[in-house]
Amino acid sequence: MKVSHAWLQTYFKDPLPKHEQLAELLTFHTFEIESVEGDVLDVKVLPDRACYALSHKGIAYEVSAITGMLIDQKEQKEVSLGSDKKIEVHIENPELCHRYTARCIEGITVKESPQWLKERLEAVGARVINNIVDATNFVMLDMGQPLHAFDADKVKGIISVRGAKNGESIELLPEKIIEHGNTILKQRIIELKETDLVIADEVGPIALAGVKGGLRASITELTKNIILESATFDPSSVRKTSTVYGLRNDSSKRFENGVPAERTMVAMDAVTAHIHSINESAKVGTVTDIYPKKQEHKTFEISSDYISDMLGVTLTTLDIEPILARLQIDYARAENVFTLIIPYDRLDLTIPQDIVEEIGRIYGYEKILATVLSETLFRPAVNKEFYYINKIRDILVAQGFSEVYTYAFVPKGDIEMEKPLAADKAFLRKDLYTGLSKALELNIRNADILGLDEIKIFEIGNVFTSSGEVLNLSLGVQNIKKSKIKENTILQESIQKISDALKIDIKVDIKEGVKVFEIDLGSIIHVLPHLTEYEEYKKEENIPIFKPFSIYPFSVRDIAVFTPAGTQEGDVREIIEKESASLLVKNRLFDVFTKEDKTSYAFRMVFQSFEKTLTEEEINDIMNRITTAMNSKEGW
Image 1 (tube, rainbow, N blue to C red):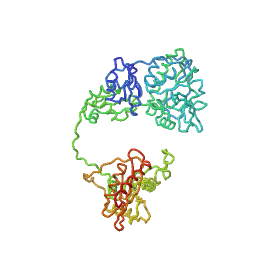
Image 2: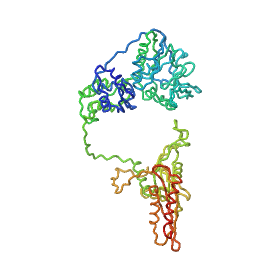
Image 3: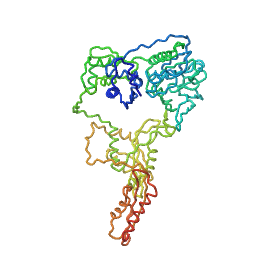
Image 4: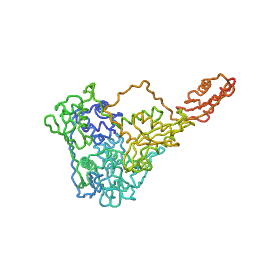
């Protein structure tokens, strides 16, 4: 969020620290400052603090808490009512709209905003539109409450906050976009879903709740009467709608992270006063405030001993009380136990640990000395399933198997997802077999670059059937070259080695031709003995070092050459590697044939670049160099 230093100063009588100093204070205690440009600080507000900190007021209160500077408490100017007109509002979905306030102001003039307002908005990168829209944006950036204004003469009858109806659509306010250096207005009509929350009149939707206004009831230069909206919408509902339609903006961002319902009326009074100050002859109507379930103060108890233990530093009640005051947290104290009343704006403070964090950062983490943890004799309880899964992993890896993870979400299954990620991922998998079979097929093509004569993979994971969730083990084997040992034999031997290591008889009969096999691992683990403690960790002598791999495709070529008596495999390999340089990643001898006084050596070469996809021409050039070098050898 872009924060104006001059704007922040309006909250204080005393001068603020200079820009860089203020940035350092905020970074050290609360927020990362991404940049300071002129009068503007770009503050990185994380989602957990967005409920209060996506506003100049919220940042001002942070500055007050950190520095101890007093906030200049200005009373909101009251506006006399000039009209008894009251907007009728119905909330049909109170679980998605926690509060809705509306007010009609008649006799306004839509015009250019005052210079000071334009400068404030432009300083933080907001687009200047007109005095009405600019007023709503100003209050949002100042207080953190998104607002909207409708042309009252275009709104027909009662305003309803409801779910969209089947077949409804809405034409949104146009967006200014730049194409080929020209600024154009982009119109957009969206077909609504029944899960979308809308603001509607008797004709149909006039806004996507918390996301974007519609064109039909929008403010224009001809507007004379307006309806102001200040509301609180469910974060999940706004996030879903804004994501589905790609409509992320300043308003939706705030609603997605939570806006306190108690702020709604405060913002309504603020925007009303502001609009009236630049339209003094306008007639302000009575506010409509629909508040189905009032926001309650969160309260909980916390002791100074608990705070001290959590922070690792001794803090007395005398240390804690002034910090709570600076955080605007009211409290009552009985000896060393505080009963806290959390401010409405602080939706992020929900558990005692949150308070500990607040006190710690205001107290100053730099004052908390680092201490070495005392050695403990505590030994963790053995998680039986975790222990045996890892033991089986080690057994299979020792046999040359590689572990894979396949998708748990699949097109078909017994258990359907209520809210699937995609149409082809609507069910939970009912076996590992299907995914492992596909993984085995995909990995066959990598055999050459891996230098493998067989692909051996396994997966341990949960499967989901109508009878419940089960832990399974699936093994897959595919011979690349002809082998005397069939795949089913390898699978049978692998299961037997698991049986021997676990000292349990796992009875399986894997028929010839079977390449993928699956067993119920949960049932096997269930009958295994429970360990009282983990085995001592044995330090590995030779720890493998990871080598980066190329993301580009590889190409495979074979070459065979007859050589005179006395020629060794290494002589042929040396020529291949010399002429291929760094592009040769695998060079494997796969056949030797001797006839009379000559020996044929056949190599399989794998070429790959770390920088690009190799062309056929580049690989042919390497092969020509290798062939030329071999032909130059006498007797080759």
